[in-house]
Length: 103
Image 1 (spheres, helix red, strand yellow):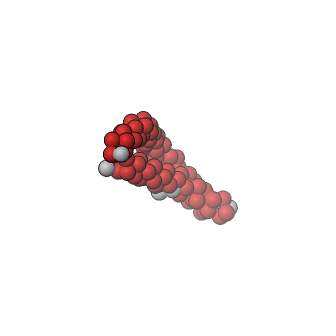
Image 2 (cartoon, one colour):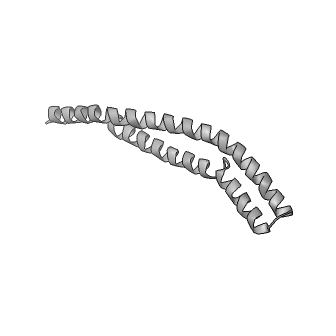
Image 3 (tube, helix red, strand yellow):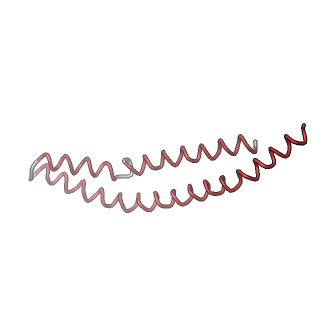
């Protein structure tokens, strides 16, 4: 019985190795994409925030508020932070699988 259990655990380890490799590669690629998009979107959000402040002073206030909200969402504190949070959850899943199977 112990031999059968040993071979089943070994089979599970062999089957989970490509899944863990795929999750690791996915996380690395997504971190790179989030990093690059954070740089670009940070610059774009600065421009939109500046235009939003100008609209608040000169033009219609509603458009200025909309521009400032858009600038916040694409800034590094908006949607990129949500993507980083989601990547953290995917990484937690990878570590949970790794601990359960190999731990």
